[in-house]
Length: 231
Image 1 (cartoon, rainbow, N blue to C red):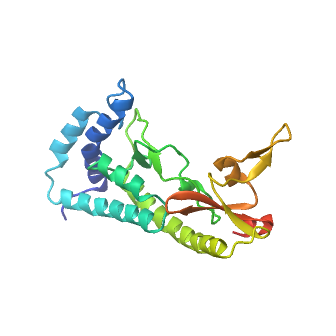
Image 2 (image 1 turned 90 degrees about the vertical axis):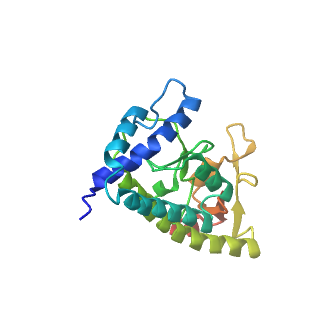
Image 3 (image 1 turned 180 degrees about the vertical axis):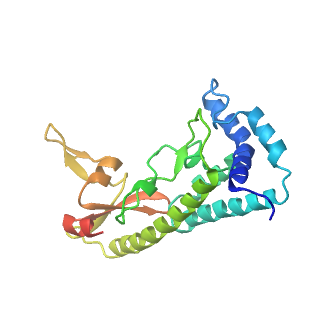
């Protein structure tokens, strides 16, 4: 009825975000002036052409609200720290995911949506924006995908958080415990020395299940790997 197509809406929202993403990428990569995959000139042309379509801005706001709800889920269920989400929200005014979430201080590029069918929740959804040379695909699909993943991960993490709290309340190192970067598991290196495991090594250990607690990576450790495998 309003003659708004999904492709036009996606392209407009991409264009509205392009200039701010380009400026951010250029701070770290001065030779990349169109780090969003879209030049400022093309973005301006798209905004001029599509921005006046009746009600298209209202439609865009609906998708911005979905993104806000996604971020609220990350906060509420401890998937990301408040600080990280706050920094991310300050960084962009018209953000849309070109491949995934992006921010300037992210250091872990392993997003937990790739964690597989089990209950482990590992890594961060907030990735470092490094720039791209080609235009992204339909950003509306990315928004919906990220929101669906957030709901699924929140359900997983809610269950694991309850188990984490039980382990913390009833510690029994012979049965279970909690490990993290500050209190890591140990391994024996090639020299026969006992050394701390890295976060990635703990994730790969068959006795652990990953969980996010207040945005921080933790691991539930079971003396019998069978229990970890069942989760």
